[in-house]
Image 1 (tube, one colour):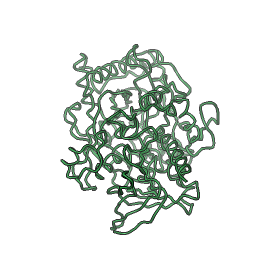
Image 2 (cartoon, one colour):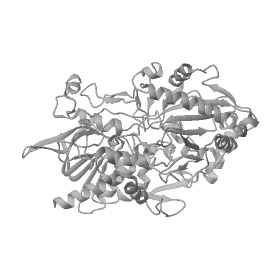
Image 3 (cartoon, one colour):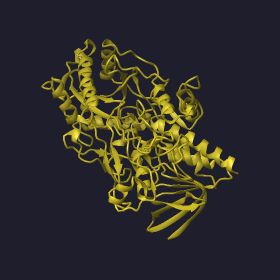
Image 4 (cartoon, one colour):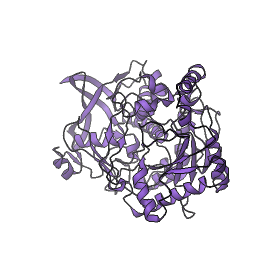
Length: 544
């Protein structure tokens, strides 16, 4: 065992949240900070080219390569479950969509954890602090922050037609999804800078890495947390990890903060003996501290990908059929950083309600000018678009659980998609709504023909079954170490993100969300990290 040193703060995980934490904590020169990341540096070309997510997901260089358990709601299918294993984490491999969710999401968080500092009007300031918005500073957006937000550098005729068709069915145009009410349709804004991916490594670590008080160790996987009992209090004193063929221990004078994500953070707690005792014993781990909510409350957005063949309009399927078109696409990106290689995975977004009785939009569309059977497969040989719709507030709950004391063994991930009657009902309603939009006049010039799920699916039961056939994750796991009130037996952290019953340990990533946000989760995770860093610095100041 080799000592990695003594630090004021240790950050476990160099992803979206970890990069922000390392930057903000090390901005105080009196604090020594260690950042541990299991993956490598973000020096892989395809991280930075927006379309390169195709080469980063399911690639061991950049992805943990997780899979879900066989899902009953998906008729026994197991899904790829990408999580970034590289500096920048999921911000290095995700869809780059800048989305905050709805104001009511954060008001619900505040109610559930009894802390008004999580309300929308309060967290808005953290979003603004981090942001460098292309339109400049106003009531809703910030300017000059590290997190660059830009408009996309392309448009598609088929997507414009879909947006017009949605308007004909009652879904209005909107200018901005990020003012607390995201209802409507627009092209997504993205975390890019002049057509190049803007991940949190560039945003936060580029500057921070030059500071003498920040140590960054890559290729180092955390194995367990270290604890001492002091004055009848169990305190986290640091972390044990492996890297470069060596086992290391690092000590934290003040705090260790987990930023390993909704899969990694609960798994590390369980490996350290923190969780449900019965489950820990079954996995071969000696229980140290009982917190039955660790690894529970897993929430994710399941997308239902409807595919429509079209005629007389360009789609990416057609543009990539010939080598000369591919060469032209590559040249356009090389010269202008625009065109299909600058594409986010989804370009057009819509937010709407599955039913008039729903208070705020509970459906999100990601519409793409392309189609394929599943991620990693080639594009279809015919022109087509995909209208992917996800239920934003699912009632299904899953879990992340280790099955072995071996840190190298992946945990069992069981999202339990479509495991409630309500989620099945919303899925059927969502597929019907997609058909209504596609049947609107604005799209008829292109003669849309449903390929998936297929017009043979008509009844409620058939549509619900079809949802299990075509449903797949949109990569938004959250909630597995949720924050909550003291009387909430399933809460893992308090509202200041301190792990209950322990000192010197916090969690600051998507795992602390009591409920998943109504939209993409990357920027809400970044907001959590910004807020957590301030709380940690405040507590350090008070203690000293």
